[in-house]
Length: 178
Ligand SMILES: CC(C)(COP(=O)(O)OP(=O)(O)OC[C@H]1O[C@@H](n2cnc3c(N)ncnc32)[C@H](O)[C@@H]1OP(=O)(O)O)[C@@H](O)C(=O)NCCC(=O)NCCS
Image 1 (tube, rainbow, N blue to C red):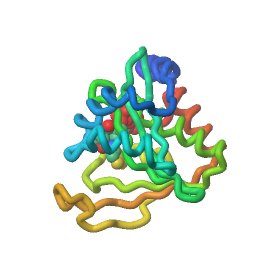
Image 2 (image 1 turned 135 degrees about the vertical axis):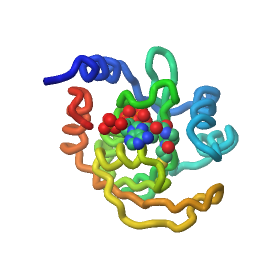
Image 3 (image 1 turned 45 degrees about the horizontal axis):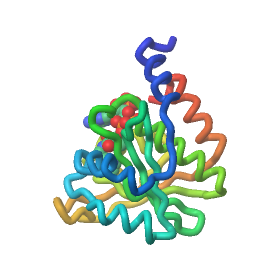
C-alpha cells in the first residue's frame, strides 16, 4: 500500500518542471553548485558551457517558482556524458534528483541517444544509490580522479531504453522507485 509520505511526494514531483538552463538562471544554479561540490565550478565555467560548447546541454529543475536543481551533459555521438547533477540541500531526499535525471533521460531517448555515462566519487553513497536505481552499472575505476582529495571515481554507464525509462518514472511518481 502506498504510504501517505509517498503519495505527498509524488504530488510534489508532478509539479516539478524541467527546462533548458539560461544564463539568467546562474544566480540560483551557483548557490546550489556551491552547496553541492567541494570544488564548485565558477559562474564563468557555466557561462562558457552555455555560450560556447556546442556539445553541452544544461537543464534546470523548477518547483514553485524556484530553481531547485540542475543537470548538465555533453553529447558525444549517441552518448550523453553527465558533467554535473545537483539538488538544493533543502530539497534533497524527496525524489527530485531521480525525477530530474529520469526527465532528462526521457528527452535523450526521444532524441535517439543510446547510452549515458558519468563518473562518481566512490564515497558518494546518495548519488551511487540513485544511479543504480536508474539502471547505471559500474564499468571501471579512475584512480585519484578528483584532484582535491585524490579520491577514486567509479565510471558508470546506462543503456537508454525509452520503455524502461518511462516505467521507472511511473514507479517514481507512484512512490515505488526506491
Ligand atoms: C545526489 C543528489 C543530486 C541526489 O538528489 P536528491 O534529490 O536528494 O535525490 P533523491 O531524493 O531522488 O534520491 C536520493 C536517494 O539517495 C538516498 N540517500 C540519500 N542520502 C544518502 C546517504 N547518505 N547514503 C545512502 N543513500 C542516501 C536516499 O535514501 C534516496 O534513495 P531512496 O529513494 O531509495 O531512499 C543530491 O544529493 C546532491 O545534490 N548531492 C550533491 C551533488 C552530488 O553529489 N552530485 C552527484 C555528483 S556525481
